[in-house]
Image 1: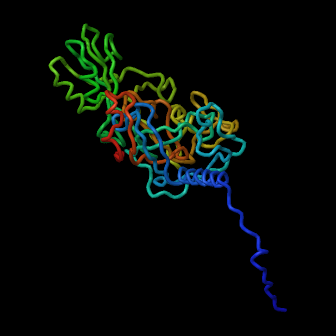
Image 2: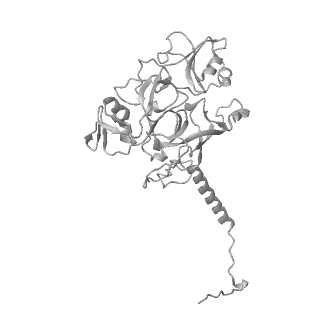
Image 3: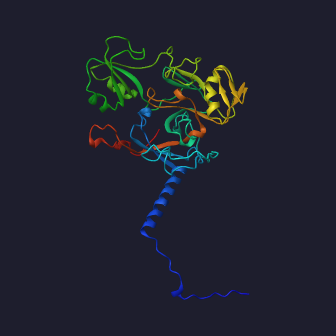
Length: 379
């Protein structure tokens, strides 16, 4: 039987209610939060530089965009989180997440791999009190990729036996020997020296213990050359730790290793699918990786052995790729030399460009914004 449409007079039809101004305001806020959350997760996220570890490539006060698409976006691991937060709710110490649910993490396809020389944002691996995706974000330059053999000799990085090309604005530590006190604002700040301090005592056994006066500065080779032209500067020389000095704070923490920040390695970066023998040296190099970042349970580390589920292993095959990161400010950077490798599942994205830069210590109000750094690509 055919259905017959029943005509309803206009006067008896229900009228659509208009949204109140408050309802429209709430809907707009919800839409903006959802859109911003999706963009932040899937495409690009904004970060700011709080420390000088990447100077002079990136400066304190730089605001930059980090691409999630280059290496592939990670799926969320911690879903119970206040949107647009990280670890704590804005302006408080109240945690912004609950770790009651932890999802398996995957990575969507990207259009490039992490390469040596890339400036990368990642989650700080040793921060074990937080889930992987909510660890503090760090930014460093990738030095070694999976399978690379890395070594630092007299402050020069060697990759697979060949010297690595240094970043164009890499900073090093120099001793500036002077004949008189220096107008620090005029000489150092106007020349772009990021950090400096007056030198009065023997420093790291690299500067002779005599009556020599001067300054310790962190700057680029080009700026160091400019400083040398001043008539009150007697000499400028790099501060490099001798090979026979050992830094106990370096990774790995082992009595077998006698390295320092300027003479480090050789060490091979772990690669997915590669098996290593559990020699005492490899236990020191890779024991923390096996225990903390590979998803293994019941791992016990000793000086010369690794035990998993009560069984001593004589070899281990890595389950994911790892990377070795260093800051461009080589003597003022807490990086892989101090805390080890960065797992692939900790990689956030690639830093692509600076969109704003604010000088935290400007010489004048007119110089508060570093106009020459706006929309600068990161190399």
